[in-house]
Amino acid sequence: MQEQLAPRRTYGRESVEFARVLTFNDGLYAIAMTLLVVSIAVPTISDTNSVGDLADALNDLSANFISFFISFAVIGRYWMAHHQFVSLLEAMDQAFIGLNLIYLAFIAFLPFPTALLGEYFENPLSVAIYAANVGIVSGLEVLLFRRAYRAKLLRRQPTPDVYRYGVIASLSPVVFFALSIPFAFVSTTLAVAFWFLAIPFATVVQRRAPEGASSLLGT
Image: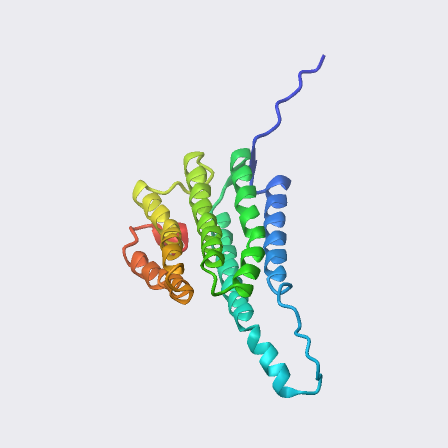
């Protein structure tokens, strides 16, 4: 009887399995970004010819528009970061693909807290749920990087200093979104403004990048 070969558990860049994961990733990102706008319904007004009524109705949707553009930017940022990260991979294994699925689950879920934030912008719980979702996504980025590092799935293995820098850079959004949650119960506007502090902080962190980090991590 011919001996059965054990299934491959590591898939190189040239494999069909690797390509299927990338295709699935991009497709899910595209769907999630498209669904963000679905929650913004076209307003209904009694006098369809009234400019003032339509303007008032659109003004009532201002929170929905804000949450849409924030989330579009957030998902776009995650797609760009994930795209850069995948470009550094030499291979994927089943554990990495499993983690990637969990990561994508929270990307796919993001349109719901976005709609919640748009509908109940002044409610601190909606802000907290949104911040928790985005924070989890950033945390899962760290786990993906950790798995790739430990399983030697990267094209070029980073030095310990570069690895620690990559972890810190990926964890910084987690910290800012987590810290914004108690602020939400004081002021939802203040909590949302707190999210944007991650941008100058990331700039400061990049200036402290160790040698070799820019070419490996795309910072």
